Structures are given as structure tokens and as C-alpha cells.
Length: 364
Image 1: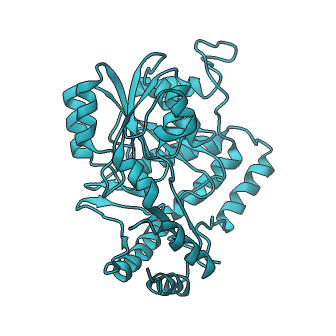
Image 2: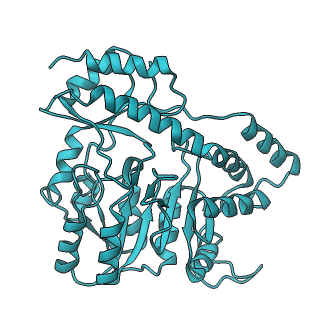
């Protein structure tokens, strides 16, 4: 089976982990600080604050930006559930916005409709889904016009760029995940990035119990700290990220060329000026054939997965909160059609050739 994900753990990761073990300082320490500094530099931001995971990073980013109970926060309806849940963690209300069917990202036209209809939207969380940047020109025009706080969910988009600027550096804050299957990983882990001293100072307290001094706690905080062990893995992974991204893009380009004339599917669409990093290589399967297509792939040794089979506003818990079907029709349609196949850098040329051969052999 050609697996859809294959985390890479090499000699550098093992070396740095052993250095941490030898130091006996396993909790937060110098490796965390080094990882924060290197990751901020990579993203093109002034600061970075490490977190225990990507969900905690989103939660921290929202709280650090001043989101509180009763606030309205607009976001896409097509993402992993943590995007919306992080809003609820703050006691705020998610305002779901439909997607652009080509990129799967939040549609700026639909976002402006919500900004006009729903008064007092305080913040917007955009998601650079599957590794594809959002339309940042349009988003930033709306930010300037409507004066909202902008948070970037970059959980799947390490190193992605819009017009040669890396994601995470556009908004008031950005949040990354280093879960085991991400483009770079620490097993579990996250990062908040920002240029704002105020936001970063708040984030430092939030991730460490609200601590302002050794025995002084001046706000409600959490235990969201990253360990030295996780940071050591992150340092090693970051050094290899650009090489892995290049390989992901090569694999995606090979697929695009092979699949471009297949009429039963739609390949990823990458607008000019966008640097996609292909956390997922996601196809749309037409004509209600997805289940049949996926079974065919599995029968022929090709791993695949659905990200995501339910728009967030249609999840059972969110239905209990009063969100109705039809709220985001493009997101609901995408949830019925998307399927992702392996694009990770561990794939050999023989692997990608096999995937191509199997998919080209599919008959309606």
C-alpha cells in the first residue's frame, strides 16, 4: 500500500533528541527558544511563541488578539474542526463563510457579504487549506475596509507563499501545527507568529499559566508549553522543510500533468502568484463516484483519504448550536467530492508512477 502520509525522522532529529536527553532538561528550555527564533525568521515575522499543538496555537492567537466571550469571528466552513472549535473555546461565535470551489479557501466575495450582514465581526480566521494560500490581496483589502483582526490558520501551509511572501506574516497573528503528518512535524506541537509585541507578550503568558513572574499570575493562562524534546525535532525538521516542499511540488506537478485530461476528476488549481506546498494533493471526483473511486484505489494498493467529508457547520455538534444545511453550499458540495492521495516527499518515482497508472486505469 502506498500510504497517504509518511513522517520523516532522520539522523539530525535523533542527534538533537539525544542532546536534550543528555541535558536532562526535557521541559521548555533553550531548544524551544532556538526553534521559536528560527521559525519566526523562516516565516518572515518578528516573533514566534511555541505551543503544545496547533489547536492550542489557534486558541492562543485568538486570546492574544483580544477575542472574548460574545465576539463574532468569521471563518471558512471547510477545514479541520479545530479552526471553529478554537473560536468557541474563547466563548466567541463562529460566523461561517463559504469557499472558493477552485482553491477550497475562504471566498473573499462571500466574506464581504457576511461582514455587511453580520454587524460587529471582530476577527476573521482564514485557513490556507491543503497548503494553498488564500487570496491575500482581497483579504487585506477587506481588513483595511472593515477593520477586523486577521488570524491566519497555517496548520497545513508551512512555507506557502502569496506573491513571494510567506503565510503567517500577513495577519495580526498566524498559527501553525506540527502534528505528525504535517509538512514538518514535532509529533505534536504548534506555533503562534506575529510582528506585534503586545500580541506576543500576551501569548507568552497564555501558554504558561498566565505567569508574569516566578510567582505572579496576572491573567488566565493555560499549560500550552512546548517541550525541549518536541522543539529539538522541530529544529531538525525546519532545516529540511524547503527540500521536502520542493519534492512535494515535483510530485504534484507530475500528477497534474498525468491527470489533466481525465474527465472524471478535477486536479488542484493553483492561481498565479500562489506557492502551494501540497500538504494534501486533493482531487475532486465528479458524478457522485467518490466512494467507488476510493475503493478502486484501495483495491489497487493506493492509499487515499477524505479531508473533509463534512463542512464544519454541518457537524452534529454545530447543528445543535443552530447552524443549518445550505449555509455554505460550495463547502457542502466539496465535502462530497474531495479525495486526497499521497504526495509526501518519501514517495519514490516508482510510487508516483504506480499511483498514476492506477488512477489512469480507472473506468467510470
